[in-house]
Amino acid sequence: MTDPVPVSPRAYNIEYAIRDVVVPAIKLESQGKEIIRLNIGDPLAYDGLPTPIHMIEAFKNALDRQDNGYGPSYGLPGLRSVIASSESNKGWNCSFDDVYVTHGVTEALQIIFAAFLQEGDIVLAPGPHYPPYLAYPQMYGGKTVEYRLNSADGWKIDLEDIKKKMNDKVRLLVLINPNNPTGNVATKEEIDSLIEIADEWPYCTIIADEIYDGLDFSGRLCSVASRSDKTPVIVLNGVSKVYFAPGWRVGYMALHDPCKKLELVRDGMERLLRSRLCASTPAQHGFMAGLTGDSKWLESHRRIVKERLDYCIGRISEIDGLECEPPGAAFYLFVKITKPQLSLDDKQFVLDLLHEKNVLVVHGSGFSSEFGHGHFRMVCLPTIEILCEAFDRISDFLM
View 1 (cartoon, rainbow, N blue to C red):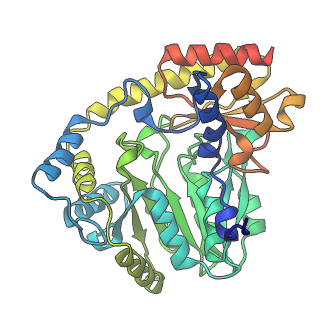
View 2 (cartoon, rainbow, N blue to C red):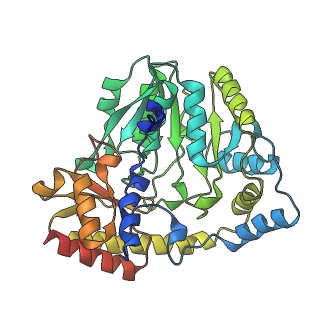
View 3 (tube, rainbow, N blue to C red):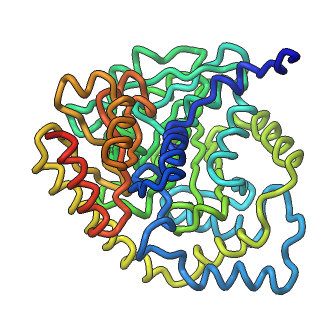
């Protein structure tokens, strides 16, 4: 037998905890086990939260009229215009030319990292965070350094930790707001303080990942771009979460560049966008309908999500061995394992829960080995009936 073809370190080192834990779950399912999956934030996997009909009709209509060829590399003009209008309504001057449509926020991140990062550059991201912020920078010569979200204080931003870790190699300072996985929503004061720190570093740009903005229950959410008058901000958003269409894979980045610092980087991003052709044309039509159509449907979806979140918080409060900070937004809970013997290895906790009780969650260290350790993330999107069964099993597991 010949030696196997070697794999590149950039691929071998990639981890995506949210889907990696599915591998053992699939094996159990192949043995006839019924797994309650609480691992992935896909609203379409659960009852009562469908993609709005008018968006689906717009997608279908594009297909019916054969509008499914290659589109402009930066996005359909109509969609870019309505995104610019939507962002401008959040308090900053966003123009058509500031908007670039991508294959979801994930591709936007890859393009940003490819355009910004050189060998040794740093992405300063919150811990805990969405896994690609740790996985992708190393593919482009950079590395991720985490700043702390304080679990003892509602997952607030540790501004002093950011100050200690800022230097001239930090090219990108990330704020995921609302946060995935914790659900925390930063206050205006926290955002202003973070921007003030970034203002001291001329080559630093802020990434404002606001993909969950329409699922804010705190009432304190504000646009990061609207608060900055010096440091560039790249806003990330898309159709997946708030418009309940994750499989469409359409997102966008909108550049707020008040001092015109990003001309070279913008050119690099545009070259990358042209080289990969375009995002899905019919899906862009569907997203456009979501942005321009009646949004009354969202209140019903929000109400369902909040009811399920509140139910989960109530159940957790009754289980010895678990604690959870109530989230201000999104549809996740980042649950603390308070039994010391179980919290030492949160990944093993997740695997044991899966094998013994057939409930699938994600280990907290998959979102940050330092700041997520001793926790697990669960999705609160299933029906109350399914959530009830899941918590009964979790409770039995911890007894």
